[in-house]
Image: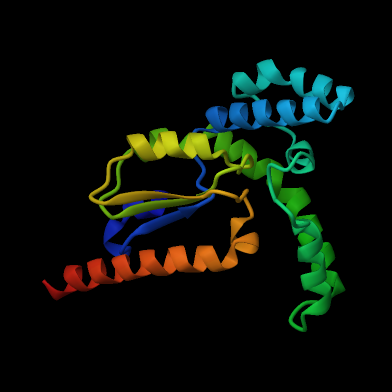
Length: 203
């Protein structure tokens, strides 16, 4: 997104899928959702752990534990996305068992770094406007990058043309569970972007 802001002439449009927004707002949404789900499940231990993080999350010092967000359905719905990754590594000819270990090692080494960078560099203050069309595609129940926080960002960001698309029955992995809907949605966006591209370069 910072690249599109810095060099808009190189892009026809920006499409954010699972768009990162204000870290603290997103994490508070994620925390509140995960606490509600843990309470409904009667898991006192998880509720206590999550509530012990409330102050540090609201102060922007840390994030909602991703293993608990996943445990309570804030990452995927009706699928096991991690298992799908592993099966893909093992069953597809372009991958092998070593790639599975490389993936796990990469996630372990980088996820904390990326979350810290996101927390310390608020994209909503770094990019407040775009000179190109701006689109966000989210799952309604995404609590890895909270949809509500993304919508707040969308509402405040200025752009010559923008749209906010929500898949009603999807979580953060809507590109896997709702593949056809995502393809249709992006195809429609593609038609719009293509027409804008032709107009831009035909003048």
